[in-house]
Length: 111
Ligand SMILES: [Zn+2]
Image 1: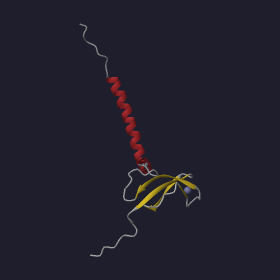
Image 2: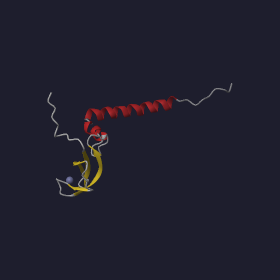
Image 3: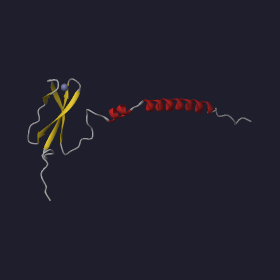
Image 4: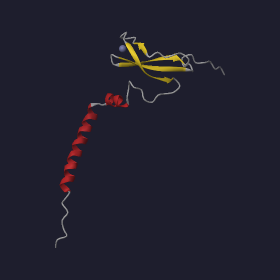
């Protein structure tokens, strides 16, 4: 069995996320013993991007600032989806109206 060290996934690296003032984020990997700078120059805009936070590479961060779950939801929204949401909202509205109408004032104990 040949086990070669994976050079693409080095252990002992830390990752820093920088926020470009132009409205996007990018990550940079640094050695664990290296000092992560507080800002990094954006490769696209040449602007100074302040660092957001640092995370070890072997630690998968569940919350990536750039892309939220909501972003995925918005991306996947299609017209049929919107139509279904609209229909659902209308149905709810109608049902709410029906329920409020069906609620009768309590009457009875006077005979
Ligand atoms: Zn940029």
